[in-house]
Amino acid sequence: MADSLVIAGREFRSRLILGSGKYASFDLMVKALEVSGTDMVTVAVRRVNLTDRANESLLDHIDTKKYHILPNTAGCYSAEEAVRTAMLAREVLDNNWIKLEVIGDEKTLFPDNQGLLEATRELVKEGFVVLPYFNDDLIVARRLIDAGAAAVMPLAAPIGSGLGIQNLTNLRILREQIHEVPLIVDAGVGTASDAALAMELGVDGVLMNTGIAGASDPVAMAEAMNLAVRAGRLAFLAGRIPRKLYASASSPIEGLSK
Image (cartoon, rainbow, N blue to C red; front, side):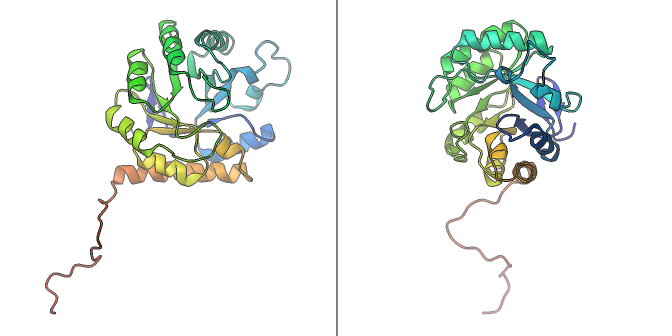
């Protein structure tokens, strides 16, 4: 198998997962998806007109034969609400994958980890492939995996902040300790160097939305993110040189006359 991202037995060529919100137009979103190289797109169930498909819908603009749709429970503030939203998405979209969000604070949009655990257990029991968005906590990650999560998705900074990777140490610990399921950085990526840095840490993928949709030129940024994720992955596989405090000559000096 090529160096691809595999979640719950499904193989994805790209390690970049894109959101579909905040674009100025559907046309701009479609162009950004195209150049990003992604093959998985997450959509907020609350933004999709599930009850009246006769009217224009976000999903009318996403080629579901080309992109795997990952519904999400954005905007849910309790486990019960998130489970109900996931159930609705599965019924209408015929899709048992869910990016699980249970928000615990309106200002920071930090996850409610206890609510995530409750919702993950319930949704796994109901046959869902669950990808929870959570704080960068190793213990929570292990509990989510024990509950049946198909991947774990720690934040790098608050959602939509564009602050970049604010928790290098915690992400490194997660990378070193979590190998049972893919580790995907979700939230905080603001520009291409952030994406490359996350991938150089060895995470399995990056999910982003605002970093692209909010850029001055979303299509150009989508292409930059595509290149950054691929470059970061390649650099991780290549293995960086050890950091040293002092200089060492680039050219061999052994045997030179003094």
